[in-house]
Length: 476
Image 1 (cartoon, rainbow, N blue to C red):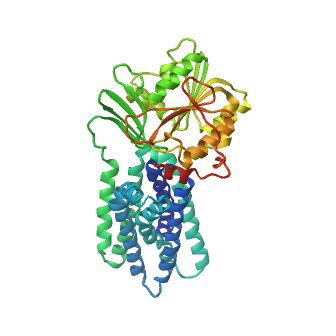
Image 2: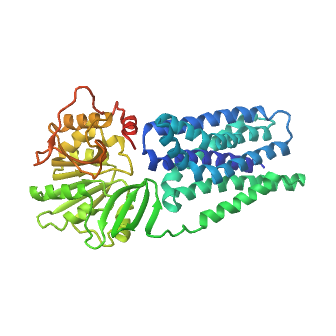
Image 3: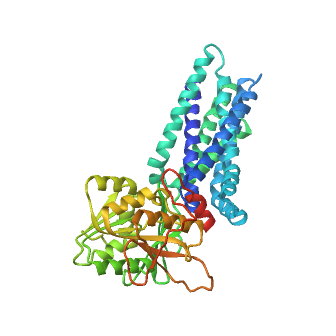
């Protein structure tokens, strides 16, 4: 029995940290990755853990072993049902609904986190104090120490394996189902123990078997084919979807258009791609750096230009090359293209150390509806300037640059580059101000406007910035 108890402690710790990682990852397509959402999710889960420990310890008084285990089974079955049939079905809907209707970034994430994660974590976390009561006797302190040891080891592996192994292997959603499976199989083992020792079958034990088989079916089931969808997956970094629409093929990351080509010509129909490509051709640059791969449309088109000898493409997601070649471009990348799988800041630091220098640099790293905050600071842009001559950025923000995000960001770029020029994509709309693609560069180009530093606003730095809040106020 002691072995089973320590195994349960290990698995409960595993699922708790795994759920934290899944929660952050599931919110990413809607609000991006940022410190605010991460801190709120972690805070809510820690609050649920602490309250669960307290209530679990309080409810152990004068209970026989079979009733302690019955309570553990009930709590774990409740948590597994909650995750399987509520949390990871309605999470995105609830968050999007709250963002639209409250227009409050902090409140939307806080309420969503409480609704989706507080109750199941609260119930599951009572396992540790209840197990400690089952183990009561001599050397109680030592036994509780072992419980916490195995729980913490489980938490460590839950945090590491969830993103590094299970996301790439079975996807984000099926990883969430795996956690329900783990909780249900713990309940099944405990139910078998109770039946063998006390000849009793609890109703919650029956439910645990149902959840166990339901989870298995979902884990091993094939994803439903959707019309016009060529490929769909969710890995450690993003949700990827490739589909065809109106004669075009779209490469979407986290719900946002990241690349798009005309199926017949295989050339991009995105305005900013055409604009940047036109400017690069005028400059006759030979060495090109593109930060942000997506569907590899720009590097593939530039590789056809004779005077361009080398194109380095940097992205943290190593799956993109194979996916783009097989499902999006449906052809191999040019031999001129060198795909470097590294975080952009890490790559820039190494490039500076190794004295790399490029004729043209393109930064196009939108992931769905947001930009990673670490790529919007003075430090990032200054490092870009150190290794490149002509720089082009794709920014999505309001056309008139009136929002806090636009002002602070353009101030940051201007302070880093010295001079900044920009051109916005004109959309067919009656709105005076709207979100659009803006090509930003450090060189004067015909038709581009020069940005003047606005002293009423600040800049973004690694140490201090309001990027997440400003992006939300601008509009997601």
